[in-house]
Image 1 (cartoon, rainbow, N blue to C red):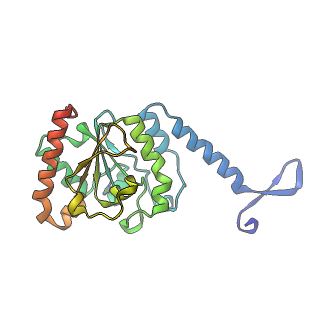
Image 2 (image 1 turned 180 degrees about the vertical axis):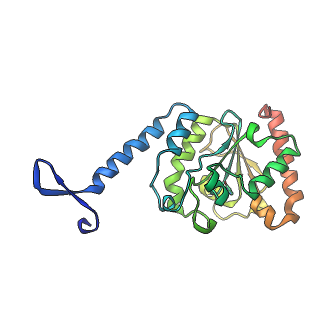
Image 3 (image 1 turned 120 degrees about the horizontal axis):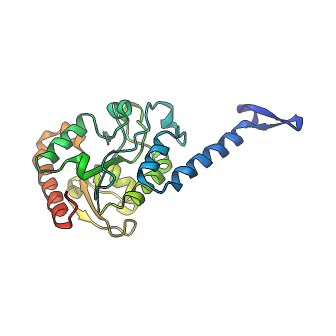
Length: 232
Ligand code: URA
């Protein structure tokens, strides 16, 4: 181990060396703690976006840490998979083709995603070639999403696609999106929050025949938003 990391001398004992990574790790941990201590959503977002996080290897290829897009004061949190190329360039979630399709479909129902929802992802950095995030990457990033939920206090969480379901609802086991999409449910890990599963809009881009089904699911979401006062 020692041979593989740079060593530095200890000032009072120049003949002794300590691995540098120990110091870097300590510094990083205190930066991470500061993020988790944020009391407001804007503070949290700024600290995370500017943190230079290196908790997982996705940091190596990213341009931006993509925290979200939309309104942290909204009552609806939509959770997708991971930033793609456009999101990585702009530093905003769901601004590529999939995001534009979702915006359009929701606009047709009177939902403005930037006003009525906050949109985030399971991981905040773009995976290479847009592959799904690995379990260990999602595990490292999940505390940030949990902190977003704690600060935002949504009354509805929409899980966009299988990756979001898999990483947020651990006891789901084997499931098929065909059966889950459009379903409302609650879960003890998310008290007082109504959960809903939707198809990921990238899936609709690949198979537009599913668009009418997704439109029906979105209508059900809009009804819930109207009934619960989550719509503006
Ligand atoms: N797909 C996602 O899951 N998230 C994004 O931000 C963009 C595309």
